[in-house]
Image 1 (cartoon, rainbow, N blue to C red):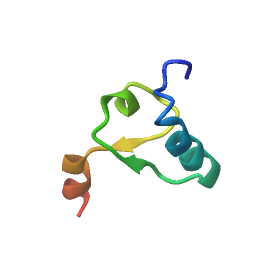
Image 2: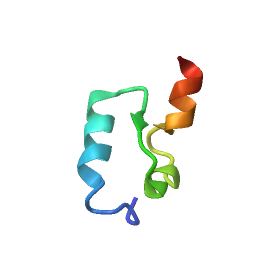
Image 3: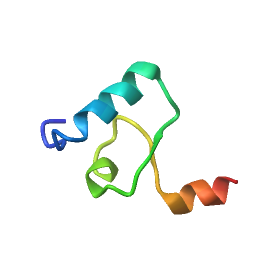
Image 4: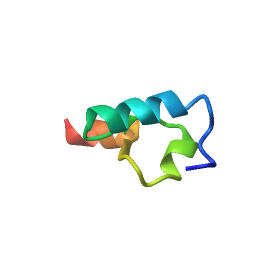
Length: 48
């Protein structure tokens, strides 16, 4: 987790604290971690 962008840390912390199913982001930094599920726009549209 040390490589997480400091600007992204609040979003990661909130997602982990609230135990959400995941977050929606196109940020490649989020895609490179495995602590929380990250949905892209394409993935969310496929779920609808």
